[in-house]
View 1: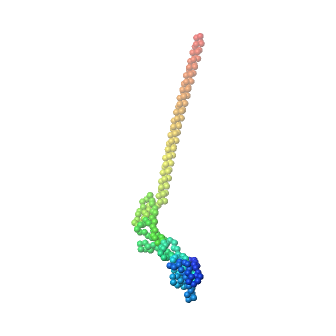
View 2: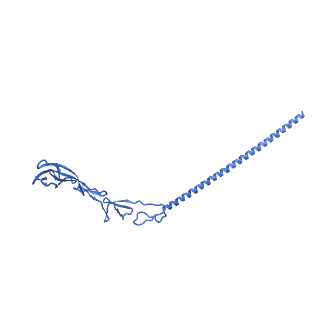
Length: 242
């Protein structure tokens, strides 16, 4: 489908049989002559009445005899988005290929096309061509899927819901974390108890050492008192003898 565009006035003949300098068809001469009191266009001795279409070299241009000249229109082609345009030689507007044929069945543009040969591809009719893409399957590590002939992705309908699995995993992780915390707490208590026992041992040793030092000091003091007493006694005896 096409429609006419804007109008362009190309030339006007100044006199009878005066040519217009423009290449139209296989000739660059368009003459305007009067026949039977009517102005007509002449191209290579071919006569065209007013309003008749003239042959052109450009398939996207449409020209008419418009004495005292001629006028040309630019052809505006229809655009079909999503379809593939096929340009034919000698034609201005392309032919559009929108539908697809697949296994003897015609599918419209944008319509899904079943691909029985490869269930792991999803296909669609796009601009007269069938375009396919690979299906992305969902995979689970907690449960083995079941495959069915003609179906790409495995089924997990027999498996527990993923929410329940995730909840169980969360409970297991929390239980393991609690056990680890209890182990660390017990280790801390054991270390504190051992530190306390060590402190008590060291305190007892210090007390024992202090007690022994005190006893030794008392012994030394007693010995000093005894020696002093003996020394006074000897001094008294010497004084009497003298």
